[in-house]
Amino acid sequence: MTLKSLAPRLTAIGSGKGGTGKTFVAVALAQAFADLGESVLVCDADLGLANTAVQLGLANGGDLPGLLAGRIALADAVAHVAIAPHAGFDLLSAPAGTGALADADGETAERLAALLKRAAGYDRVLIDLGAGVGAAAMTLAAHADDTLVLATPDPASLTDAYAFAKLMLKRTGGRAPAIVVNMAAGASEAKRTADTFIRSAQIFLKTVPTYLGFVPTDARVVEAVRRQTMLCALYPQSSAVAAIAALAGQLGGKTGGSPGGQSLR
Ligand SMILES: Nc1ncnc2c1ncn2[C@@H]1O[C@H](COP(=O)(O)OP(=O)(O)OP(=O)(O)O)[C@@H](O)[C@H]1O
Ligand SMILES: [Mg+2]
Image (cartoon, rainbow, N blue to C red):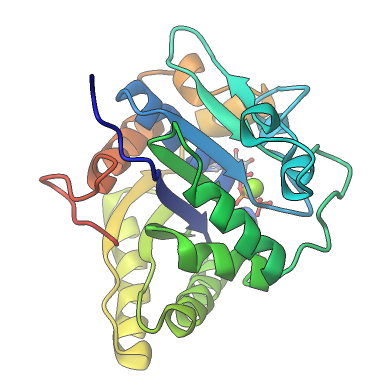
């Protein structure tokens, strides 16, 4: 019998700016961890505008409002996602297109964080924080074991990532998010982007965030999103799939701290 720790590892993905690829990265990372044998839950914490289920082509993405209201248990609030031949994972989301939970605040996010920390049976919970630096996103970011801030080479995305880091440091008393660069032309553009972020954090916030890795711009990501399926099912050999696998490796197993990476706890 394998002994499983009861508490899953919470990995949150935020960005400040919208459209940086949080939902794509959250779902792709979930699949990568599931393929590594982890039992994974994706929580769509874009509370007002949930769209993970849409991105995956699912009619039902779970019942997060029901869970938060205490109407149903977690096991009944999740939808299972399985795209052959890959291992499946679960999704916990509000119904898309309803605006349910649009008024969710920090207090709701506190309750959600507590529920996710007790999500028995899961090795990892990936939290798609949604855009913005509002109370709900920052509360969940502060509760996660690993918090990633996703930036693109777009300067506006960098200033928003900086704001995200600043607020997270304030909330946590000094813990900074790790930076991941999405939609970079290549490794050197990604590194330049990450360095700009890290330098600003070092000078103005007196902290040195970890650079976790990057995902290149890949037209096949856009195609997979439009076709409402997973990139790894459509183009398993694509560069973005390889980059996501490398990111999963950097994040390490459930206990964190793989040989190539470092625990962000
Ligand atoms: N590496 C990439 N290469 C090319 N296109 C990408 C990449 N990552 C994301 N995209 C595209 O960017 C768009 C936004 O992605 P996604 O919906 O995941 O972003 P988001 O940060 O979750 O947005 P929102 O803030 O609205 O929730 C999608 O059309 C997606 O196809
Ligand atoms: Mg999104």
